Length: 214
Length: 214
DNA sequence: GGCAATCAGTGACAAAGTCACAAAGTCAAT
DNA sequence: ATTGACTTTGTGACTTTGTCACTGATTGCC
Image (tube, rainbow over all chains, first blue to last red; front, side):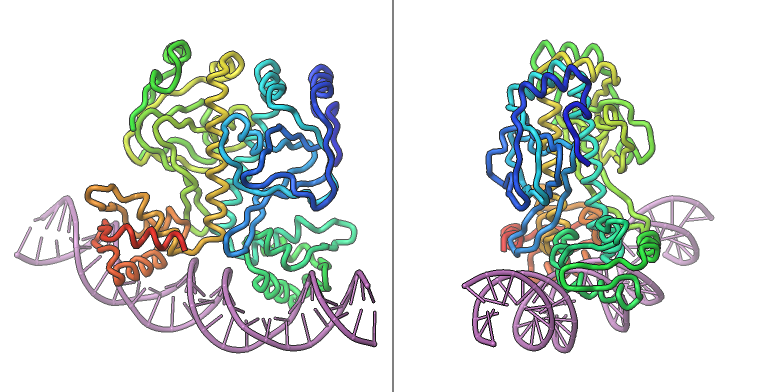
């Protein structure tokens, strides 16, 4: 899952980026940006995962999307050119490594490098599509389907263990902890999962997949 | 609310656009793009309103956002460069007028015109921010708050008449018609609105605003 | 071991969504 | 003017989801 500039861009562009970009890293749990904070740079993530979430007045939260290695943070990039205030919080889920480009460099590359322009636009397109899908999901799908999908996405194949609390999962779905607990219990009674404090053992991925498709 | 190329761009760029762009227009109700359809051009809307919505298997729908005069359809633009399939449907809510740019022209302008680049990026930034706000709203806010806000947004000040059916409003919110009907009835019993077949008379905008802020 | 913090379970209730059907308004053809 | 098709709205019963208040269990730290 790790990327390098060389694995993402052709030699010439990677060279240019390497000379202009500053490496950044942060430990797991670090808050990288927040509503109203600066974020005056273009971030390209090379290793680790960043979770971008929104927090409501009533304390409930929802994960908007995640940034994976090779992704750029297009939403912060928007703020560079569009100068709108950024509406969410970014948190490192794992230790992360990446590079940031100062705004002038970002602008120059955008003007001069078709490859870089194409990279940035593709990132935008993917993110927009993702956000649209997320709206559909949140607004129109049942919680059991969404939870099943989330479990499948989080399970690492050999062991099928998911190290998350019910609260974590609820935040991911934008739902409430009690709702997730009850739904998980229903899955457990069907024999599809096994519940332990702090983690979930996925016993029957196939059954969960069936839930997501009816 | 009408725009022209001259009102959006400086003289030189407007000139270039005018020579390369093709005017397009469509009547109210026309479907402009849909999942899996071509949309191989960059659309700039000059007059009218386009509604972009998603439709779920169960028949419920939700409005993702609207495109107003002066906006470009960045999501279709994404498909040009990102080559992802477009995930929603675009419908003209009013008769519309605009221009489309063939992909090569779009790409050339992006490369050569800082003003055009800036325009496109601003449009992206605004749309992303809007979509994020929409997710928060759909996932975390109560239906009475969302309905009150929608009514306020749709009411045209002098008369305060909203010409929509309950079904229309439900689709806008991604909710069910019965839910909207019941909520409207509650508003009516508070004396805030008057309900008629096919339209709603907003009697007390101030009271509805209070709903949206607690 | 004692203690605080985190995590999960639960019952009662409120809000929202679903289903099935009834009633009322609209409109065009006759 | 009446009929009949259609759209829009109303309503009750029920399910699902969200909220609140509280309990017990587990964990890590002192």
